[in-house]
Length: 537
Ligand code: FAD
Ligand code: SIN
Image 1 (cartoon, protein in one colour):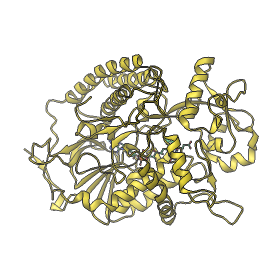
Image 2 (cartoon, rainbow, N blue to C red):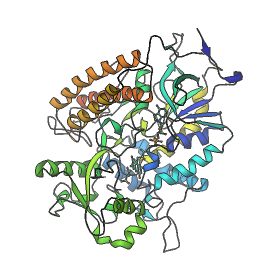
Image 3 (cartoon, rainbow, N blue to C red):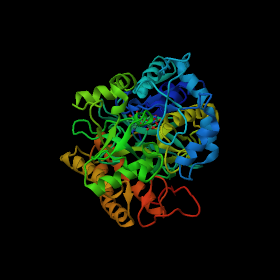
């Protein structure tokens, strides 16, 4: 059988999949121990990271404390956070953020009071603690991290490489404990699948917002990492906790555009068409309650009134403040004909963040040897049943650091210069009806929106499960019959990730944080993670 081996018999590199904050930060730190090959499926900048607005939650002010940040995170997480993980992330935060500044990330500074970072506030935070670069924090992070990665002599970046599946010793029918030894990736420039040997594979593939019809996520967020890890035998956890951001812009020409929670931190209120602040009826914190609570209140209000959206009213802050603090948001709204100084902004909740993911330790180790998972793709226990705003970028930074520190341990049993079988195309031919792929994409995203959204019932979840079973079968048939394309690969992952979300949701017989099931309205006595292991779906 034809095989590939690392070029010139050099030891296999550490292969990082993904060029968001997790993948880039890890790559920069991992080079101390090994050369890094970073694969990313589109232009390197395309990632959820690039669209982050609010910023990074981190204790930097004398009025704040680790204890308060820990408490806010635990409170938002609705009893399911792993406290030791929360403490470590919060306490390591300042050191990791200082490294970003050293790397050249420019956070917005306070104009008065002798400088220091300007700190934003978001839902669930009892203090101002969110460092930001205006309202384009993600773009600034990608700019600085990518520029350092691209100029690093030990890192090779390959764009348009879509990771397909992990290669394990079990799949290769080798003796001994199962281990990830590489992956197959579609080189989308040449339409060829390559086998890539790896001393370790690091999934930094982000989330799965595209499982839903309406999302704040860009096109890359198709749950590839969760699907790949699960197919390879890895355990996944807490996937039922899909976070819906309360305030995605409601406009036909900008369906994924986020209106940052930071606006609420600066005084914006969520109101209905009559201008009533209905969020106060469910929580005294009103518009600044954690996201699960605000999104549910909006969902309830829209269902009751039949209105297509609610509104975010920040008129009180005036033109000068808005232009200076939120230039990107204000500019985008104006281009769309909405003047936030004169009128409330129409908004709706949309799928935003995957709180669950590949079950991982804070140093990225998963249930599979040779596989690390970092950032949004991972479930470490930090977020519990609902992520506190702006804790995601922080988690990715801390994980990247911890994973790089422990990399020698992860590499200890790595094979040297492994030979891998080439991808077999078999009888596959070009798909004659590509439109079927589009239809299935649409069907999955619509059914996830209709049956697995903010308010759930067991009947609807079961309905989603049986439809997804058929869709999964159909997609697997395409996968084996046709030559793979990026769209087909993403559809396959989207279908599996959606099925895992539904299975997780059915297993949780309570309502907690982001998961609200009308058939189980109360909390279970014991809070447990929902873990799905290989073959259980
Ligand atoms: P990502 O940044 O999503 O990167 C994933 C990478 O993996 C991408 O490069 C992608 O192309 C690549 N990839 C995926 N699949 C494959 C594959 N099969 N093969 C090859 N490459 C692949 N969080 C905060 O803490 N603060 C905020 O202010 C904030 N604002 C947000 C605003 C928006 C609009 C969105 C969508 C999210 C926001 N979040 C925020 C969440 C946060 O941005 C993300 O959770 C975080 O950036 C995830 O980083 P990551 O590196 O794990 O993944
Ligand atoms: C936002 O700016 O509202 C997004 C922050 C986050 O997702 O943490």
